[in-house]
Amino acid sequence: MMDILEVKNLCKSYKNGDEKLEIIKGMDFSLPVGKRMVITGESGCGKSTFLNMVGSLDQPDSGQIIVDGTDITALDSAGLCQYRNHTIGFVFQFHYLLKELTALENVMIPALVAGLSRRIASSRAAELLEQVKMTHRKDFYPSRLSGGERQRIAVARALVNNPVLLLADEPTGNLDQDNSRLVENLLFQIVEKLNTSLILVTHDLRIASHGDIKVRMEKGSFVPL
Amino acid sequence: MIRPFTLFYAFKTLFSRSGSGAFRHIRGAVLGAAISIIPLVVVLEIADGMMQGIVDRYMEISSFHMQVSLTEPDTVAQEDELLDRIRNIDGVTYVFPYTQGGGILYGENGRTGITVRGIPDSLFKEDEGFSHYITVKEGEFDLSEPDSLIISTETAQRLKAHIGDEIKLLTAKVIPGRPMLLRPTRFKVKGIYSSGYQELDMLSAFITQQYGERLFKDDSSRMIGVKISNPHTGELFDVADQIRYLSDGVRVVTWDVLNDSLVASLDTTKKFLVFIMILILGVASVNISSSMIMMVISKRQDIALLKSAGASDSDISSIFVLTGLFIGVSAAALGTALGIAAAININEIIDFIGAVLHFDLFDSDYYLEKIPVDLSLYKLSAAAALAVLFAVVASWLPARRAGRINPVEIFRKH
Image 1 (cartoon, rainbow over the protein chains, first blue to last red):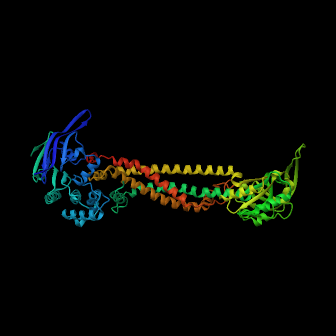
Image 2: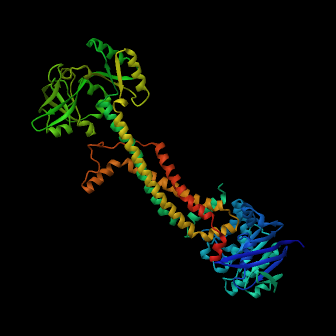
Image 3: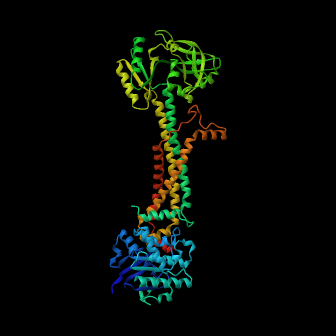
């Protein structure tokens, strides 16, 4: 089975005054296509940093991150923009919906960034909204949506460009139990249906149980859960 | 390059019906920029009107379009022949002999220095340019009697003179080898006029041509005034050249040379005013920059999200430059419209302010009584384009900062 993600000797550290904090130390790891990986770990252990580096929002100190056959650490800024737009999708703990846009327009945004026409972007966004069961709220602005609804819109937005890899950083962390289950079920159902690989960061061990690969981040590397 | 999604997002950001549109954040900047354009538009629209109004008065009733003189006049017959030949030149509308000299007008109640022109009685009746700028306030413009004198309202006020009053003109008679002789001549005030520009009026009085020739006998005082149909065009120089070709002894001086210091002074004043107005526009654009910085700060999460969705630094910058462009275009449209309205009604506005404050905003000694407005699409477009340019430049720096926002830092803070 081909790997959608290959991480080779990845290192990342931060400076805290004179002190150097090594967050990720020489990590080697791969994720096969279509697999759902769940990462747990204590706060500040580097889960989100890892996700941000795979998402090319943050740069590693050294090492390689190969996504879908492309070493993203070697890409220039234009290549990184295209990578973020076409190859991956992000779902954050906070929904980050654009408050001036309706639910449908929010989902359209990555497709418009990709250069698709408004008509095609709208049509794709409508399909995704149907999949997250939000068609009835498509013309609603975020201020009129509940927390769970907003996060479902964020899931639809992350998937509108058919990414091969979905990165979710505690997507249910801000939700109550019922909404958390709803979003979690939707997320896993959709990625399975679309055969999208998933890397999900969570503190919730119950959600972690849904993963094909379950790991815990400890001392800068992954250990099986 | 501006991509379509940046236009979409900029538009949605400004005009969203969500109730959180950013327009409310920038409307202050739009209004501020619009207000700052008003004085620039007003100055551009009235400055040229003022300049032309003043210059036209000088060249129609004082210097005339051109002055022609014979460097070595022989006989009156020679001058008459020259008058006839000038009349036959294409473009010439009126030709007349006149004399000009200085003197002191004095009466029982005062005195004032004056330039006296001895003109034919027909000038007021036959030359449209002259009569257009002469408004007879009292009496009539009648030079049929030899001792007729026409003075301005300003001169009449200084001398406390009225129609029918006797006024004396003191002129100097120079006889070579003998002391200068001062000669008083009696005149009767027949008319009191105003050209609408008191600085010109207070220096000009008119007497009959015949009396002028008696008072100012030296050759330099005798001249031929020429009026043409288009004095602001190249016709002026064409006609001047043709007159010069008529005879070797002909000297021609055009109105732009006769009034060059006046034109230069007015032009410098206009440029200085426009410069100050552009500075005001520049100050207003600082306000636009501040509003844009506030907008960028309030949109940091949105910027981070857009970048995580693949938007580049330049895409983000484009969104804010487009917002700046919108501010500039809106402010230019609003400011230009208000500026035109203010320029058209400038006389009423000045009168109103004067009435409210019981104070003459502009002393009509130095400005025209009624300010002419010269609406020019070219100048309006230039003012509007400048406002848009300033707004775009003012938004460029905040837009550049927006493009450099690091999404990880924003996500980490939330």
